[in-house]
Length: 279
Length: 263
Image (tube, rainbow over all chains, first blue to last red; front, side, top):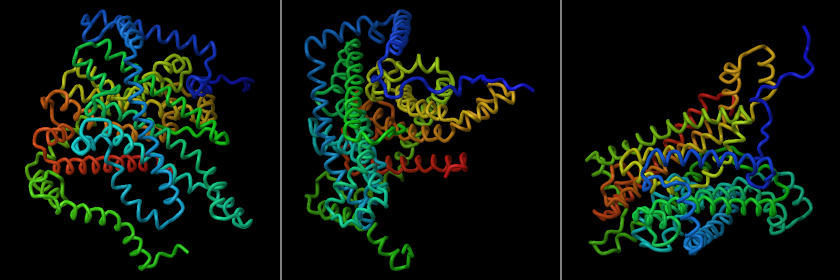
């Protein structure tokens, strides 16, 4: 029996060559591959459009690009996108302001956790979307409704990740700091916060993803402005190319914000590697 | 230290119940100060409404209709997601070419494609199915790819050395190896799907003037827009929460059953 010096490696075991973090490693190779994929994608789209023959249902890619260009030039996309993004930032800051201190409290004190946790577990399964009718009644159609929905949606990922992050703190570090006579406040600032921050950041990114998905629903139903509203508005006007253009805008803004959060994550917690979550 | 005596356990229970009970009591007191005709929900009225709705059977049938859509859409998405995920995970060429497209669609929320789904499929069940399938496709796909890429290379090499065919390697080595990740993906997907169906039904109800097609989301919208019954809306919200909880527990149970080697 001979042993071949270089065993054939089946495809399934080859290490994934594709970079996990999208966008940041735009080498010529990935650029070329993306270009190729999108060409095929647009070609298929065009064929489907041609076969379908109803531009109200499926406009040609060129018409969509045209609509996108005119909406960009007239500033309509920027207007709606900035409204939505501002609401999102406001809601996310509110969630962070509430969930992070609460998470630290629950992570540090068993009593606090025993008090608060049942309430959290009671509310958490009720999705933000399910609050829409009641919130419509309370806040009416306007700015407050989407902000409330997104605040609620973002609350839980940040809270749970903060609690987990605080709990994960190395007990030896805490003991060492205490032995050296470090006070309560410095212990929090110099040991607990740096240790929990990577997990908190993951929570913030999850919260962003969840609230960005919720904003469309909230604006679609209960707001006179924003990207979600614009999509529905142009559907009712049967201006399908513009509908597609705004859907594209939602994807792009969401992607750019996530990229920004990733950058922030890397900047704030350079010591944490590979804290990618699975969702 | 962690010797749970009886006293200890009761004190934990008391602490656990304090806030929820307090909340309900405050809610009740607040509601009882309102004038008689107020539409604001009150705990006792919510309970009464729950009884009425259960008795009439409307709650159960709406919930079942939504659940049926979720299960169907989720099933389609799982089959597609797992198949494509296995393919992408085991072939770098496929993965490299599809990644740009997948990553571009991923940030587009399921609700964003609802207007298009309505244009294509109308306001009935097909639209709801499409939204659910779209929403649950990505968690399944991404976790499957992730799971396949983490399968121990040595196992695959060993199987290959023993002359086992590609197909058998895929089903006997790669699939079990990726199973924990796949199951996690399906659990996340089911959670997302349940949220998406409520959103889809609500929005279809809102945008088609009540001419939609049932389900618990639509029911909530009718209670909001036509009957103005906030007690019933709270009942629906509670049902949405309970169902979400049950789905999650069911999937955790399945995970425990199917992958006993993982705690």
